[in-house]
Image (tube, rainbow, N blue to C red):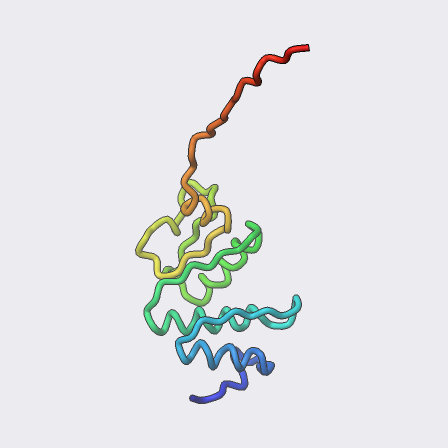
Length: 131
């Protein structure tokens, strides 16, 4: 197993190197690090790795502005293979199941997982009070 020391021209920190080694070995990875420490670089590596393996990718973002930015970033790198499902566009490209890579707003993804159920309200009459 070769140890990567850089990715996309950026020198990797040791936690990034260990995460990339795990990805290369086919293991799952959870990266917990402070904001700005470089978690996204590991995610980008995992995405590139999945593309090389021909796997389908779903990238979620918690806010719409971020999902729009990531869609632009990934489209610039991967072209028409990237779709978007952001929840409010009439001509969403990402709704196609054949797209190998989708960028989704988190609420759009959750809507597909949570089946709405009718609201059920149980009412119980209290026994009459005697004074």
